[in-house]
Length: 296
Image 1 (spheres, rainbow, N blue to C red):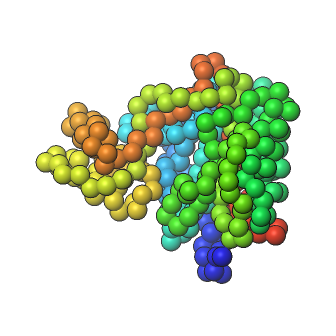
Image 2 (cartoon, rainbow, N blue to C red):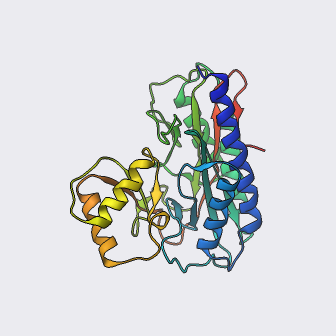
């Protein structure tokens, strides 16, 4: 069970995330740089008194997740893009995580509506004693009922203090998950629907990392990364929070730390080329009446 002061911290983080996503709707336009959008949202979270639970994700078109601005990123949001904006904030380690899809093309309203309906129906089920399998089945049935495919290898996840991915997942397809919800559990629920294959794969260089363990290294750049990552208490981070410029030494340090198991690297996750992926996400506290605390 959550204590009252813990609930208040979740709610405070949720209000910040909800406001950040409203700002994202206003700022996400063709021609806007990915770096500008990410910076605006991350600065907003901090100005509101939250801390960043993870780098703001901006994933375009066939990319479902784990993309963000890199150091000296020159990309701009193209005309007719389908933009997923995923935002996370925490207050004293109590995390709120939510995402929206913005259709700049005007062509994929049904796809966006599909994931929003799947999310809404799933959230209603976050009551004590409910089986996770029933929630996943509801998500899958809703998405397939609209003529799209759920992304089979992306899931929602339990939220714990300073732990973005707890030990219980919420699949977007019906799988046997031997867990019944308990009052006070906290989850991020995130249906993904696609016009493509229904399965994402790693694509491109990782921009997001999380600290796993200390490693012996003589490389001062690697030590700087480790020092920063360790202070994050396991929460994901980006190198642009640490360095202003990309250098060959930085790439060497990252490769060394990933290969040694000191860092985990999150690569962008994409469906097949030419497909479009939509995402909707909210965070919820399990109760007799589910508390969706990232919703305005």
